[in-house]
Image (cartoon, rainbow, N blue to C red; front, side, top):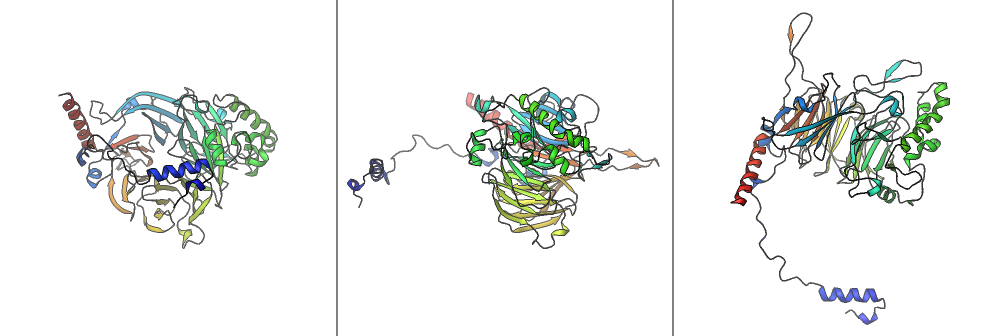
Length: 530
């Protein structure tokens, strides 16, 4: 029995009475009309690779000439393919950014998609990138102490790219609806750079190391469009929040008015000792001459000031910052070479040059477990970690090492489920919508589709037309297809975008399913009118 008179707190008494009155009560009627029937399976949208039949019917189309950069010169390999709303953003090795309007409606000339309104921009580099050198796809070089050039990475791919979108709602965090920013890393100055994608000149809005000492090797943007994780040569990873001061303050559990220079990564020019800014990091790595070393701090401070003053989204002396480093992820003992971020699971999986693979929580920033470490048997035979991807639906982690051409699948709890040797060194891999298939591409120029739980090779897709070349002996040699460098699904998983080392972009879908869906939509429209 409950004696409500004995409850002295008025609010608690009223809550107890309300619970007694309504406990177990169910409304007599929830809805006034029958629930709509489910659509038949053949009328539902089916993601690409959702069945073996769709895998067999996959077709490939090269994007038409009007959707490519206008000039005839080559732009290097495709470095990134990103779908942002109704736009397809392609980034090439020479840092050319090609943007086209994208639609999944047939264009009327035989293509099951439409590409229009092409815009070509150049990602600022060299003088506007704060450092005199940047890495390029064809010649990834940096100056050494003796003045000669040396390769900075075995893999010639320029670093990483990602796209972040602003908070929804007009005026949120000093931005307007539709603001889109391109994040990039791999520069000589070891900075994470943020450029305005909407700007005709790709204006640099922010450039900061966030405390990374040395190169920022990789970055990954979460599905929320505001969370970013970077991995660096200093064996640490950093969690960033882009253009959301409220979220950044919540994740760091700090006072919004507290401008701690270690967390507030936009202020790294004034906290070189704590954060290891550009000059300090370059000096530690032996990359500056004596004259450059003496001038480093002055140049760095002036460049940072120019960056901040040119950024419309930053308010001088205000609380908001465009890039906020909120967590540092520790645990690695070698440079971080691969990062996979799952906003759904709130997890980030990182791989290092020594073959170790670690799991951290994103929002808390704490270490969860090691998937691979020094205690793993025969760890030396695998080599550095090249790529990691996460199947959020099944909680699987896929790890690839180019050196040994090994492919391994772990459960998120750390169990090794399966491993195999690939037929080619991989450069890209993605997971299907339901998480049960792994699609990979690499130096062999073909797509391979694996079942993710046992890594059984289900199918191989050869879609490129090899170009025939003649050797000095005038004998015709069969040419190897161009290596696949990028794979990316559209948001509805109906299309797969493929980028190659030769700079070509291919789009893959099942045209039969697309035509069936279009026919069903047209029939429903006319049936409703009749």
